[in-house]
Amino acid sequence: MKKFRDISKADYKQTEHEISRYWDDIDLLRQSVETRKDKEPFVFYEGPPTANGRPGIHHVIARTLKDSVCRFKTMEGYQVKRKAGWDTHGLPVEIEVEKQLGLKDKTDIEQYGIAEFNEKCRESVFTYEAQWRDMTERMAYLIDMDNPYITLDNNYIETEWWILDNMFKQGLMYEGHKILPYCPRCGTGLASHEVAQGYEEIKTMTAYAKFKKKDADEYFLAWTTTPWTLLSNVSLTVHPDVDYLKIRTKDKEGVKGEVYYISKPLVDKVIHEEYEVLEEMKGKDMEFMEYEQLMPYVELPAGKKAFFVTCADYVTTEDGTGIVHTAPAFGEDDYNTGMRYKLPVLNPVDDTGRFRGTPWSEMFVMDADQAILKWLKEEGKLYRKEPVLHNYPHCWRCHTPLLYYARPSWYIQMTKLKDKLIENNNSVEWYPEFVGEKRFGNWLENLNDWAISRSRYWGTPLPLWRCECGHVESIGSRKELA
Image (cartoon, rainbow, N blue to C red; front, top):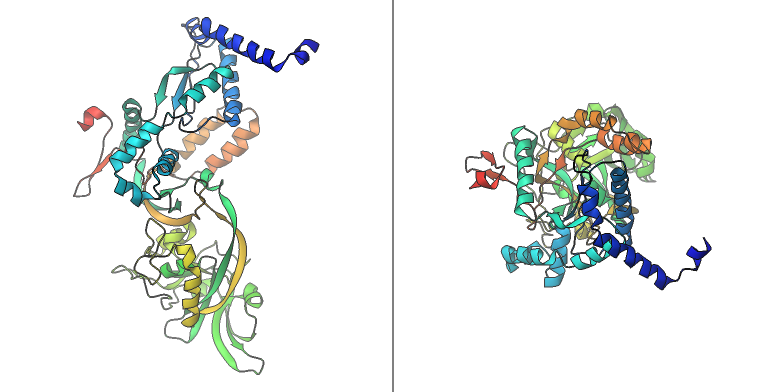
């Protein structure tokens, strides 16, 4: 033990290099595979790193765990082929190249040229490969880096096409609108684990908006933390079993004011004036009551009905007014309510996060909140405004606030496979048990369909072609495509 403590840093480095060289000399990786030719295989494909970024200490930690498992399975007698890989597609590569070329967004990429941009992406993906190889050798990680799988390689892409083609033919793929957390700067949706990486505290000015009841001098009060979504409002949602009041405000002299609809549990929190109760009702009694469009800038599609009260169980009386402003284009609950009531999806926001066809068309939507609040006040449609501090999701790559809105996307219908996935998970021997039972098991229990398409340039082409008649054809190989 004393000898180990007394070893110098230089001696340690020398010993490290000698061991590494010795393993290279005897070709330990090849030997550990070939001496077990007839043994049961334990296949290991490394979850691929991106070689256009430098390796870090977190990669050492992860690779130590991977290496330990492979060495253990080798000692158990398995033939363990260990294949390295490179993740060469996707947004991280695009963003790196955008920085190199001084491009700001997707429009800049299109002006530069998509083919030329993709070629730059291809050139950039192995920028730090030598550093990765050096780290791999220095940490004595045994893996075949001379014959890696590479995600930009046509053979790899063809394998993905074959898998997707099979899923399409089994009826497991569909095109739909789903509410995605979307980064308007990067021009792509984010997965839930990506969203979790980017929360930042922001100050928001919220609005208590007044929606005028149709053919009556009465108003529904609805609270929103996102005033910019009010342009796309198509319904007001109440809880069917909550008590609601119709009240008339009055000043200290008893002069009668306006008539409002609001939930009973929240009336004293929201209404700062004196009031009298005119009527009490359940939320379900308000269903289909009609009101006037709040902001007349987005037209309804022909044949669509909107601007009436809907019911949903997700409405709470913890804050707000108990009446929820509903815009199906900008929230999952809103979208689901819209589907139940066949409401239109009004979305005047383009891919860059700006309104189109409105007085605020050149503004990023969240920057338009103050202008919209001013408009509401001038039009007599604002009861009051109120600042709140809250955590809001931002893009973990560029720190742009994310927008939740409905975008067309291709999905794999994972919910159809849910029972089989749970059954397979229950057959796995997890260590520790709670990971499989709780963390992974709970995730499977709450499984959603998987949005696989991205509106970007440097990635695997989706093997789907649509005819002019609307028919969609799936292709499973290069031979079939030719």
